[in-house]
Length: 165
Image 1 (cartoon, rainbow, N blue to C red):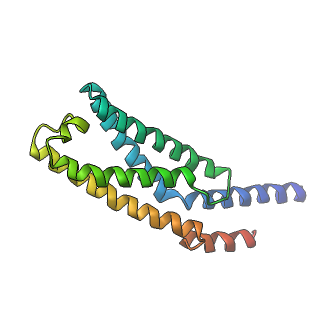
Image 2 (cartoon, helix red, strand yellow):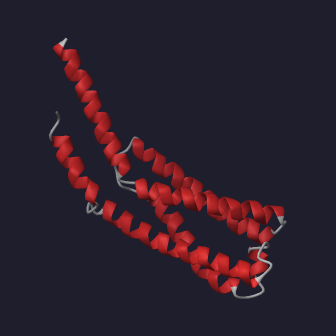
Image 3 (cartoon, rainbow, N blue to C red):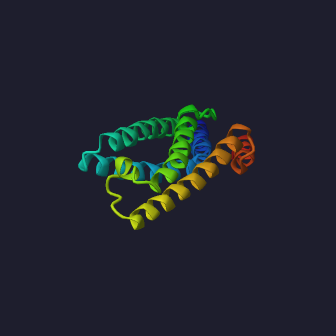
């Protein structure tokens, strides 16, 4: 019976460690979810307005975010800190946002954002794009900290791993 209790305790400990490693990516996952739905809305509107160019750009970024989401979900099974697709997605999103802001100030904005009929809508889009840039920068810092082992969770995880109850 004592052996069985030890096995159960070991499994609980392993599950806790796995959960802690997965939690290192919590901020990235939340931001990714926000970006996913924002880009999904853009894609839906671009398709419904029959904007080929808008649909293409929204579709490309949507595929990249799906790949990043899958990669992040895989962290439940892997302890490595490799985030190749997540970095590609966030770099792409950052570039998109930087390029799209000046475009929103021109009449060409209707090609990419066909629903931006007025300058007020364009200003809302620019605000969203600026928030997106700030979010991307925050994620870049978070990824760098995780990959360099400087995130605040790693020390706690290592301590917990070494002190099995």
